[in-house]
Amino acid sequence: MKIRLFLTAALLAASGTAFAAPHEGSAFIHDYDADHDGQVTRAEFDAVRTARFKATDANGDGWLSEDEYVGEYQTRLEQQLAASDRSEEKKAEERQRQMRQAKVRFGVLDKDKDTRMSRAEYDASGTRAFAEQDDDKDGVVNAADAAATRAKQLAAQQKD
Image (cartoon, rainbow, N blue to C red; front, side):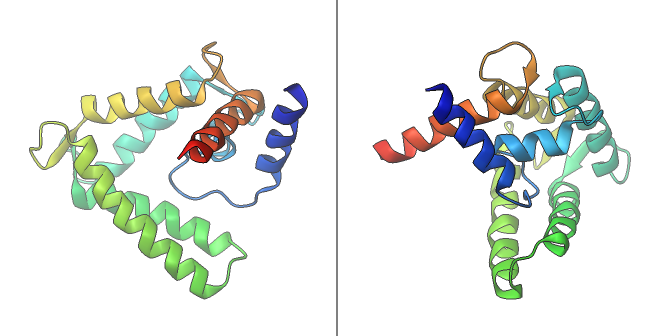
């Protein structure tokens, strides 16, 4: 089992550029590891999320419109696509898929369906995301957590 987790972690590390929504462990660590020590503490995660919310709230009204949410996401996605070695055709496909998903994600995260995302709604999604990545529930996401989470995801996909 330890060998499988190690191999999964190695594959994740070698998998290349992560895309804007960091749902896989290696992308999550890349996006939130502020001190570049290979792991993400809850404090690091919260600090990045706070800064991202403030930056996304372009008009400073304390909530995110769909345009603000999707626009911020698109900016990050475009930076990542520009750095990717994928073909232009593959980048276009990824862009279309990711942007469609960003709009769906906004609708899901807007729990009260008032067409704006409150800070509480935004924070709740972050709490869930961190909990999903922190496999051993120690408050730190590292390569072992990423490998364990990915192995569980792969096992669930094989069941389907």
